Image 1 (tube, one colour):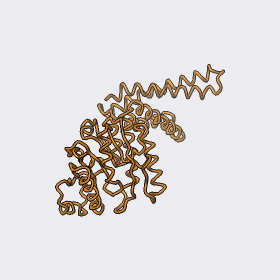
Image 2: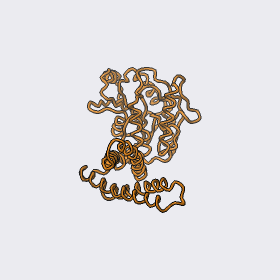
Image 3: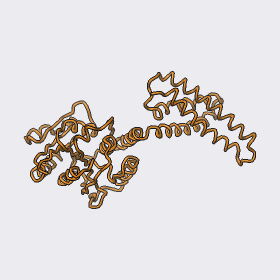
Image 4: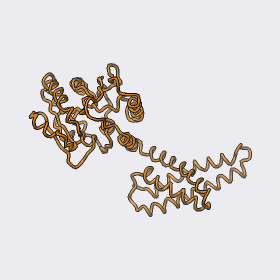
Amino acid sequence: MQQETVTIILPTYEEVDSLPSLIAAVEKVKEESLPNLQLIIVDDNSDDGTEELITSTDKSWVRLIVRRDEKGLSTAVIRGLEEADSDFCIVMDADGSHPASVIPAMINALVSGADFTVGSRYVPGGSTEDGWGVLRWLNSKIATLMARPFTTVKDSMSGFLGLQHKTFLAAKDLDPVGYKIGLELIVKCGCKNVVEVPIHFRTRQLGESKLTLKVQWEYLQHVIRLLRYTHPKFVSFFTFATVGVSGLGVYILALLVTPLIIAIWIAMTWNFFWDRKYAFWDARSTSIFSQYLGFVSICSVGAVANYFITSWFVEHAHGIPLAGLVGGLSASVIGIVFNYVFNKVLVFKK
């Protein structure tokens, strides 16, 4: 692998204590296996001595980019990938948890035809250092399960990634949020042949973990964004139906304290707010006022149809047990489909 050009992307924020040993480990790989290797450190203005450290290190193959006006691991990785000019790129964490010694194996997987490679804890030969904790292990497993609609990779949450630079350049609509860029790249770069290389994942030795409730919430948002990208129609309708069910609960509660017509209006307004935000997230071509009027008009037709369908079942379907309930459920399903289709076509146009 002497001829391959490789760029290591290292996003950092307040990781100055971990950098010396990590740079030394990467330098060993450069000397033993990959002479055409460079390291790009993308720092989010840590102001912790990182700039002084890199200056004093004085290695021509190490480059530091300091982002003064932007923060975020995923966008830092993208910045590094944009700045790279090599054949292959490897992304790794700066906390020392990823073994640099595995980089040649990851490059070899890419040379052999893989679209994407992952340093994996969960394949044979992979492991996690003791002391990780049950909650963190459970968090990783749940996050991996949530990634199943997009990939069968066992360690899709790994931050130790590799791909050809041209694969990154072919990515479409990159829109990362949070700290897990790997799933974004696998999906948006259209990577099908993903090879997992076993690693021993070390527990952070220095500094503090970046895994917070905010980060977990951002990951959930990221999964929703990717579902919108890969299955937009399904997500739109499923969200619309879910909001509709919640609106029924709002209607019942409002009916306890307000007249019928007011309860209906409150439920419709509730549904409109959440449907516009989540079910029709990409429809902003007309004003919110116009969309609100159109939404209420269409849902009013659906409500009237619901009433007549339920009434028909109650009056004519005597042979059906719980005819009123069956009628109500049938009308609700028809109403949801009717409301969704006409709102999608007439109100929330792209």
